[in-house]
Length: 112
Image (cartoon, rainbow, N blue to C red; front, side, top):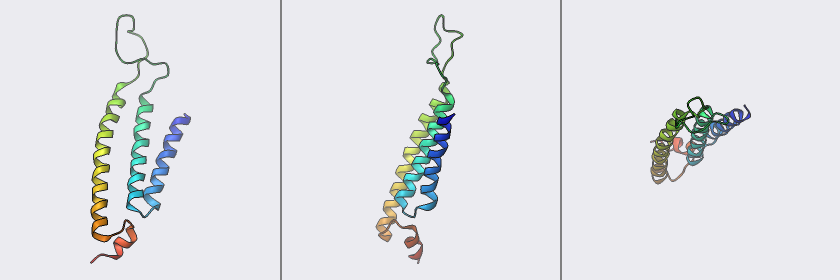
């Protein structure tokens, strides 16, 4: 149970970075932390204490298995998250080239 609370705490750290910080790079890092906490939560949902890998062989028909579906979902989410982070970093670099700053407040002032 404590591990789930730590996942929520890690998510809140990322949420703090997204809501409070005004630097685009720090916001992207906050989003990545939130994504990793959700991935960790999904992995923990599929974990079974003293569970074995889900390969059924002779004599293991009634054994306790770890759920492989959350692991597959997390692998897909990691790939999507890396692509999203790369896209966000690319957009941040283009904004820096145009405005010369990563500060959101200064970017809002430079509209025109």
